[in-house]
Image (cartoon, rainbow over all chains, first blue to last red; front, side, top):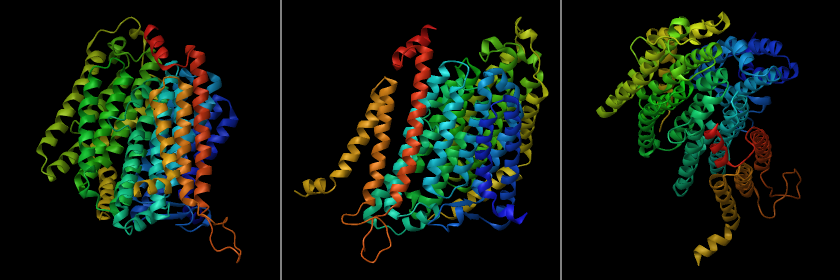
Length: 497
Length: 121
């Protein structure tokens, strides 16, 4: 076992990468799904083993190909990225059974195997970004995940899926290129691409090069903000989430933006924060400002959306605002709140998008007006939607409350009373858009078409129920969410200059 | 005079930045999807230059172990950019494939016309 144990970091990337190739060769939907399911279920165990190891003995360093860092590429796992790896691989595994019927329903038979292949490639890219300790390697994985995401979105049944994928491709590539420009500045300044090494060398660059350091910081911030859809760089997100296949939307909403957020946290707190006094820069306040705008404006837009998927997409932009708010606050409680919301939001949003996917599977529509009364015909699905929706609002007893509690405490620690009111205010707007849906689906009389639907089969119900229970469970037992996030936040803030 | 001198000494960076801005401008300003991709490609290519230029040392050789050569250029930027070129090709290829599919679905690759057709439909 010890031979496997020492290779865990590379397995995290290698397993889905090889799986993607094999699945592409299979070509038949059912066998492709079976292999994808097996691959998806291996990964959480790999990530879990690493998380336990990191919590027990500290960061893992893995020299790729036996070349010692900083010359070779280093895979470095600490509490923060072990948490992200665990999240991405677990969400991928839990929602996988849902894909079988949903993907077969929405895609042509000939495309199914390609869909699973692209999903595994995307998974490999996302896990790669999270596991690597090399700035340029992160760019390559970021583009692996992004390119496969464009394909996943373009496979959506509507022709507007193609347009959304193209627009995302343009925005995503600009973002990635900005990121590479930033990395280029860092490389010219320090002569290194290893993140730990960059941080150490950046601390010793002369004061006359301060401008170049700030330029690198600016390029990386803007580039990654495009990838993580920070308001107002979120323009690609609503269309992409609306027209992608239902299952792909659930997966992407739960994982893709989260990994970009992780990378931003890594740059702020493990690279720039270690090398320069980042708290003296106005960047924290700037991010807090944009986050508040996201929380309020995107939530407000969501209130008026008639398409359920688009409404949830705008809600995602707002919820990303909460996460970046925690990053901007940059104190123990605030950062914990931001990091724990990465996990909590992923669980809730995956549940919500799966519920909407299940409704589409039965009722062929995601337009709110056509879904009137569906709660009486699909009680379990709608109940799951309701609980996850309350999580989104931040009702006590759900995971969403935990994140907002920490964020509010973080704001109070800074003495920003107004911010606490804004957090509560944004939650109230969320209550409006979730409540509006609940009123339509539960209280109205079902139409003739809706009267014929019923809850989806077990393979679709099970992931939905697991995620919904997780939403409630992590509202009470926070050891594995807020506990881990708090440990990560402590080590990140402790490393700051 | 010193400004002119800085300009001439760093003329390669000036060209790089001009290409960068030109590429980004095309992406933003053009409604034709193929032209957008051309702009995107120019934008990415300028970044290749940004990496390659600091790696070049005048009068230096390739990094070979030989007592006759003392000064050598750093090979790492070239290797990085080889990777970035592959990523760039994949991006443009995927982008063009999407444009082909969009053209099949809508009968045009002009963004404003596509929006119009979606509104009508």
